[in-house]
Length: 380
Ligand code: TYM
Image 1 (tube, protein in one colour):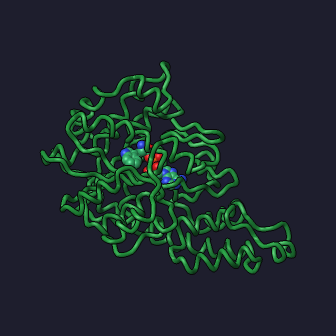
Image 2 (spheres, rainbow, N blue to C red):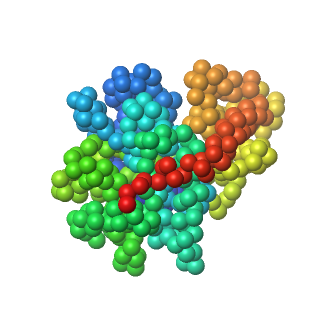
């Protein structure tokens, strides 16, 4: 469990301002260096802006995965979503990046929806299991809307009887190798926590080996994910070789900060993020009224001193999500920092970008309702 000075990162709780170099040391991952990026580029021809800008910044065993790929041993992708409620822009980051990987490498993708997890870790004990299953089906529409290839993409829903049946046998074997003291050390669990919580990580490990189990041969796996999910796979990487499988390779993303000063995107404060179902007006209001600004107190002061793009929520969102063009982004940075661009202008540009994205996303989300069946894995 990462609990360095001033910040904490676990799969269920992220607090404070994350120092990513410290986190790399603490988690024991490898920084994504230029040499590895060049290796990726050899196969993909260009680099996604999330790689160029080190939004995806750290990995485990990516060079091994590329070695295998270059030997002709194709990998598959695995990522997931814990359906705790509607999805916000932050949740979409790994999916947008994963779609690019799927397109570039032409590989299969498995997506796990952990409605069991969100039930086991819910804060309100009156919430029933079905609530999270319903959110899972809603969230699936957002994931489909990202544009994955239905022929190569398979959704797993943890409590769906067929899928549960498929995964449980493997999860049992994995859980047999994880002691309670490991779960306590890695996840910070205590004796008062339910045994369901202790067991859950075994289920999240399964899709990393399921295609290998189904085909009866080892297939390398690459998991693009937010770094908060790393602890699950640190445990899985320990256990899976003992069961005869490869360790999955990981590619970690930073956790994009929310709109408010404290940086958290949280369902308890709707102003802290953009939800994928927000209307144009809601986006406008959130950015204008609530997005933290790096601008100065008065127009005169802003023109004289310039803004601070690094702390400005609109700028950060353009950088992480909405302005893929490096030249345009660099100009915005320069103009804002020099005081030539005003906060109102930066916000207006960001609103336009977000609303253009959401308009398309929401259209595709509607169409996704008819496609759901193609994405749910047909196993039994
Ligand atoms: P969940 O639903 O919390 O998050 C889904 C994915 O989004 C990432 N993420 C973010 N990325 C960038 N900026 C943010 N602000 C942000 N917030 C969340 C998460 O790291 C995650 O990659 N237990 C998992 C579901 C899961 C999974 C997996 C995730 C099952 N199998 C395999 C990754 C890989 C969960 O609750 O994710």
